[in-house]
Each structure stands twice: as structure tokens, then as C-alpha cells.
Length: 166
Image (cartoon, rainbow, N blue to C red; front, side, top):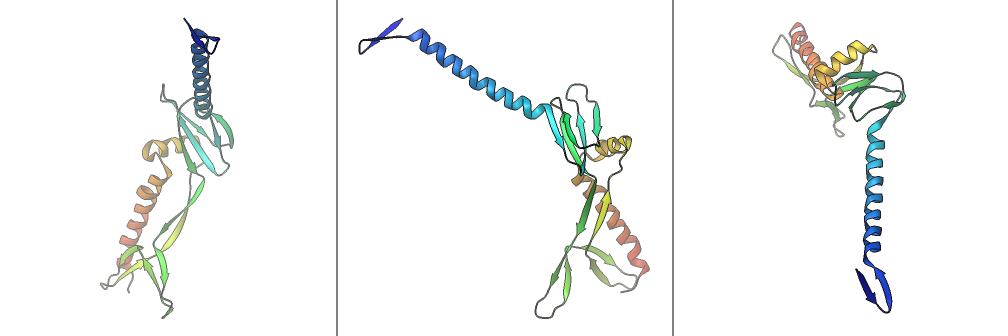
């Protein structure tokens, strides 16, 4: 089918083929970008990386930094070392007294109460078997901190508080 415009003949089939080609080129670029971001993953020296294969479910652990084959798997990164902080210290400028806000509550044997603020450094084990067990139990570093480290600190404060006086 030909369309006449100002004496020029435009071949509609050629125009449509050009549009199809442009659409296919854009789609190819988008697919290439998607594939490139889901095929490889960069691991920093300060972390461990766990990749779970989406088809087989197999789990691979990487402890060395560099670029690793992801193969569209889900990636979870754990820090080698991290710091868990609880509470924050607020200093009253008028009285120059400090107080703990949102810290760990402690009850002493004489009935007194206090809040403890602080930080605990923790480190992931470096062997593959332990990393897989932690990955299966907690899935993320944030959950390790809240469910393992935070709860251990709460228990330590609960059980040691009654042995002290205020």
C-alpha cells in the first residue's frame, strides 16, 4: 500500500518495518541490561555472600571478594563484622548530666531500675557450613542482630540485674 504525500511516495511497509526494528532494538537493550544485572554480583571484602539458585534451591557461599556468577539467584550479604548498638545517650546541656534513651532496661535486686546504653561488636563465622546455617535460620544480618544478638543482650541484662544493687 502506498501513500502519496507532496509528490513523494512513502512505502508504508518500510515505515512499519523500521518501527518494528526500533522496538525490537529497545527491547533487546532492556533485556541485556536486566540480564547483565542478574547474572553477576560484586562482593566487597567486608562481607560474605550467599546466593540461592532459583531453580534448584542450592545455596552457594562466597567468602572471597570479587565478581561472582549469580545466575538469576537471590543474593544475601552478611557483614564479616558489625556493631549492634542499643540505646542512645542524651546529655542535658544545663546540668551536664547524661541519660540513656531507649536502652536495655535493668532491674536490680533492691528494686531499683536503670537503662543501659552501649554497643556490642559481633563477627560472623567464616566457614561455609556455619554461614549456611545462619542463612537458613535468619536470612538477613538485620534479623541476626534483632533475634540473636538483641535477645541475648536482653537475657543477659534480665539475669544479671538481680545480682547487683542500684
